[in-house]
Image (cartoon, rainbow, N blue to C red; front, side, top):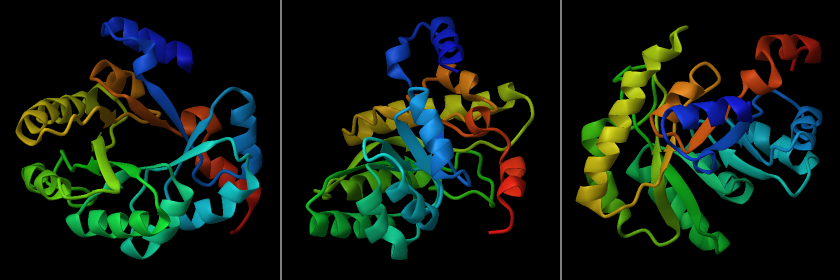
Length: 226
């Protein structure tokens, strides 16, 4: 996997040190996480707070965890406790809830704003035209640090189909950087099907699940109901 990331970096004139793999362990157990940790991965992602709440205490304390899925405001306190970064902040109200929970915990939390670049109604995320206003509101936050942007493109079997959405987010980032003063250094883009395209378009965080752990449906059948 690292070789494929390195090759994508070479094609786009980037350094491989600019790209970090987030191993998304959704539906996989602690034993699978530790197998990946033994292979050298140290950063893991979860989609759901409730699953992470059960899994993370059973894994090595030396691992780092990011929340990459949708976050409900009633799960904010647990999210602040469990994760070192949230990729999916999608409203001012959620950012304010995170700010309050972080202040209570004495913690600073980096977040990415999730942007619905495709405009799909089934997708979470801010509309692109909403982002400048949200960034302006974020200037008053003290315990939440907006460090980047995230998006999920429409699913397509061909990796190249994702390129216009990743490129558009990168272009929007340049405009938002200039207008807001936020560096927005991270782009959380790219999953198992299209991460090489994402790296070529500027990804700093790629969220890989199936390509590392295997098909989730097969794993769910092995584990049985629940």
